[in-house]
Length: 100
Image (tube, rainbow, N blue to C red):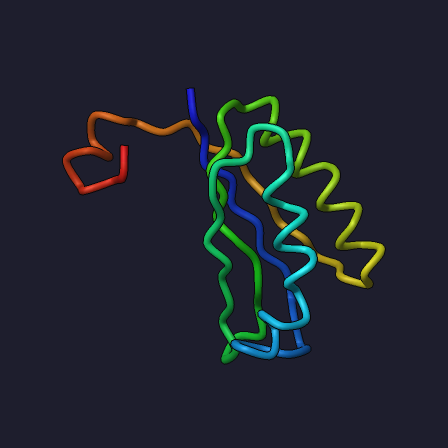
């Protein structure tokens, strides 16, 4: 069963198109992660936060990615990284136009 994973962390660097340019290689590498389906990249410049909402095929793949990604973010100098994995209620999600 597919799961949603949410990650956020304080971010004070670049935003928008400049972030897209700088993170292009990272974005391409995420596409190759086991069980990865899609990601929404999130940013809140006002609150100085960045992160993402991901869809993975299984909880195991999402949790493995979250562990690896948290360590990678720490190596990039980020701290206060928050991540959670959630099961999806497909019936209710379909009623609210989720793309299943």
